[in-house]
Length: 283
Ligand code: GUN
Image 1 (tube, rainbow, N blue to C red):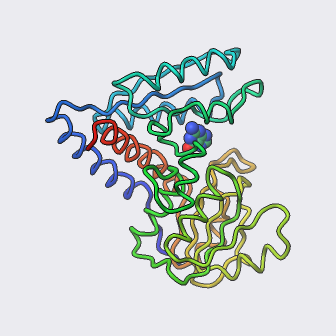
Image 2 (image 1 turned 90 degrees about the vertical axis):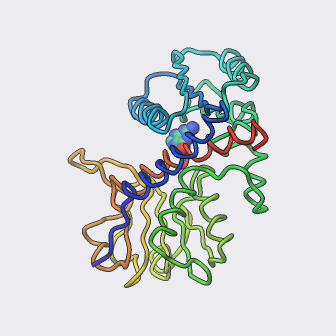
């Protein structure tokens, strides 16, 4: 039976470290500030934004919420971002995705100043990650790496398989594993022999967005399994991309859903915001 890696515990540790550093910054008269933009009333986005605001308060950051109506125009959204880019008490800007269909997500990401881009979605930050010379790491993949480190798992030389190729998770995840000398394969919807490739993984990261997609026959005995998914099963119960009941007995380490990767994303956002505040203040 696998050891469960608790994102709840690890994220609490990360947030506590951030809180302590925030206290030290306060002595210098610096309070990190995060602006969170939400457009429309997607219920899942609302929950995420509320959790991000709560985490800010707990570590001692200022958080400003900009809740815009679903009909907001591209011009209005870009004008807000431009204002926040030059607002001195705001160190980090996050625009919750997905945006309503009439808005151009790419243009919005491009408009956020790279120095305040705590999601690390801006092309300049993505490029920096590619060459291993970055200020910000994207929160979810960085959270997965933190979980791997917390469990004392060595990545170097391991076969790492990432299922999913999104810009937010799959692609940067592969890059971070590569930076630590993993031998990395990215699988996606057109991958042939998916089962065999996954079953060759020493470290398997599931970021597909399909409930209980990863079954026991896709997992090698003793593999480390990290589940990025947040889905609802047939009964409406929260579940990951991994069939936990089937896979846990085969894995050496596994992350649960909820309480695994999810809380890490927010903890890493706090870390990025702290970093952004230090950068703005030349620290
Ligand atoms: N939507 C889902 N995940 C994320 C995230 O990490 N950042 C933002 N901005 N939107 C998201």
